[in-house]
Structures are given as C-alpha cells and as structure tokens.
Amino acid sequence: MRTPIIAGNWKLHMNPEQTVEFVKAVSAKLPESSKVESLICAPAVDLDALRKAAEGTNLHVGAENAYFEEEGAFTGETSPKVLKEMGIQYCIIGHSERRGYFHETDEDINKKAKALFANGVTPIICCGESLETREANKQEEWVVSQIKAALKDLSAEQVSSLVIAYEPIWAIGTGKTASSDQAEEMCKTIRETVKDLYNEETAENVRIQYGGSVKPANVKELMAKPNIDGGLVGGASLDPESYLALVNYQD
Ligand SMILES: O=C[C@H](O)COP(=O)(O)O
Image (cartoon, rainbow, N blue to C red; front, side):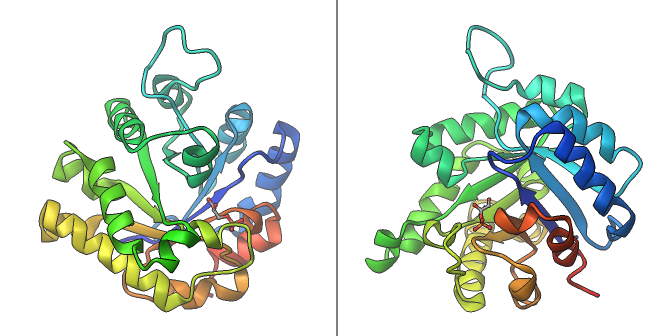
C-alpha cells in the first residue's frame, strides 16, 4: 500500500524566519505520517531552519535541487552529501523550471538521482510536457522518454523508493489544472513504463504525484484517482491554512 505524499515546493519564496513561523502554524495539525506524508521542499538557504523547526513534528523536509557532485569547484551548487548530513530526506530534481531556465538535461537529472541515492536522499523526479507538445498529442512519448532517461541504470529497489512528479508545464502556476482524468491517464502511463522497465512490484511501489495548480478545492478529486499518490504543490503550499487543507484532504 502506497502512503500518499503531499509536498510543497516553495520555489524562490520564504526566508528562515517565515519558515519557522510556517512550521509553528502547521505542526500541531499535520496528519500522521503513516496516513499522509506531509513534506515541504524549501530553498537551500531555509533548510537548516526548516529541519530544526520540523524536528519532532510530522513534517518531512526536502530540498528543491542538488548537484550531482558532492564537493569541488562548483560555485553556487548544493551538495547531496551535505543535504544528507543536514538530515534532509527528499530532493526535487528535474523540475521544469530547472530544465527550462537552467538548461538541465535528462542526463543531468539521471546523474543527480544517482548522487542523491549514493547519499541516502530520496529523489522526487519531475517530468511533464509543454503546451506545444500536448497540442501535438505527443505528451505520452515525451514523458515516457523523460522517465526512461531519468531512471537509467537505477535498480528496482531504488525506483521502488523514489517519487515521480508528473507536472504538465501548461498547468504550473497558471490556475489551469489538468483534469483529474488527464492527470490520472499520464500517471498510469508512468506506472506502466516503470513496470515495463522493471517489474510489477516496483511499479506498485513507486509513488507518483501530480503537480500543476493543485489547490484545496481540487486535491480530493485528484487524490481519488488510483494512480495519483500525491501532489507537488507550488503556490497553494505557501499559506499555512491552505497547506493544512491539502495535507488533510482525507478529513
Ligand atoms: O512544483 C510545483 C509545481 O511547479 C506546481 O506549481 P503550482 O502549484 O504553483 O502550479
């Protein structure tokens, strides 16, 4: 049985003080981790404050990006080894904003996944098509190719434990959510791709999130779909009340 995972992706928002305030506001009302995993992925500059504030609560902590090298002359990058040392459990990789603005390739994302596993941090691997690709009805082949590239040479055990986030680019921050049927259709395709690449057990274990204008008003419908195991939420994760409504969608 897959435990649902609702993750906030704060992007370039929040400072350490706001982070501590946020955790204070949500910590008493988070669901049990066995019921729903509540996660916040924060900017690197907030991670220390977030991890300390979240200690002893049901809030899990993740980063928004990491480099594939552990140390060296790589100005401005974040080390997966240091994430582990800081007690960070998850790290988003391959978000469409990283692919688009920072020119990250499928190969980089595969290297980052391996570096995170080498350091005991669980990757959340993002994939998703542009509006142009969807209008050309090529979304399935696009996403399948991103998944195959990202998972290259990972073991079945590793893939069982990671998280995949399907985020159609046209639905991010636009208020235009994919319909729950569109989201389910692609999450199902992703699970079938994992089954083809590995086996049934791995496909049953891997958790697949949908991201793109997820809000308290639509989370329940999305989470009711059999292949959607969670949400990766931008805007609606910044406000404590809205975040609590998302993670407590079962109530
Ligand atoms: O990682 C989160 C996604 O980019 C979705 O962002 P959004 O919920 O603001 O549309």
